[in-house]
Length: 208
Image: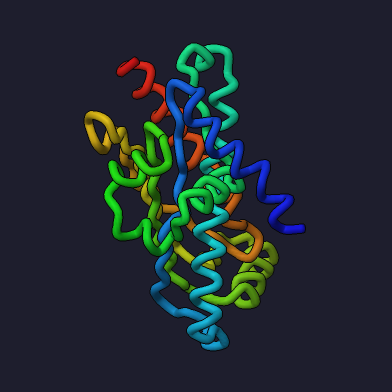
């Protein structure tokens, strides 16, 4: 059953790069943890959470770029942004793993996958306090009408666009954002992905 579901995405992954003038592959983000990492996290928990964060950030960037690709002013650029499943299907069709791709250059990855641009991202999450403590401080802040620091973590994220057939890194920007018990990663980082995507398209327009 799983192979039957994956087959259409394998075909899409093979066809899409051949059709579009520009094809963007957003790789899973590389995540590291620092600070007061919750003691309840085992090494396995940490690795699982880092991988999930990396996929979540990848999905957010893909969604942001995809929305812009359908904007009327950007349609002449003829940009295709590979979805997560499409990219995974394409990687599988090339008999590659993400671990193997870690040791490959952008040019090698692009030539193998048949894409023209690669988006890479890294993020460092620095843990500050637990959700429970953050909620408690938020409650006190409301009751006392004071602005108290309630951040659960700081996120230092970098979004980069690589043009593999010419100029290498054509965009890279760093953002610092905070999360809390009432403010998720998605809410905190939404503008970072949106601003980066807009800038990436502006740069691609100039080089078109």
